[in-house]
Length: 143
Figure (cartoon, rainbow, N blue to C red):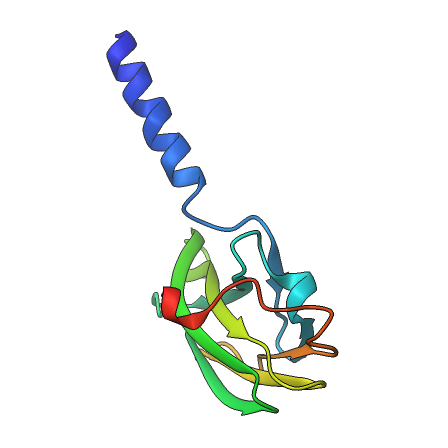
């Protein structure tokens, strides 16, 4: 019995570290995200979006524009939560899009668009005001 309890505790502990704890919640609009402030301890920005639908469709996080030498790259999309309302016959799901970034010139940034049938204009403008005071905590070649 102790062995089973230990195994369950280890699986729970490992899964707890699989996702970030610092999210930027996106609404169905443009959201401005300061890169350094939004980055997790590992240097990754986690964008969280909630979608609904009669089927389960994973949203697509796309980098559609980069300016001033600032670079972004989507590295992973994780399902965080999922529920089903049987009266509405509708799924509600929360997803995390993990974005890595490297700094550019002063006042640089990138635009990440989130595409899903239940969303109209969900996007994140990830920017940095002064790259000398705030160097990127990660480098793209690590991923």
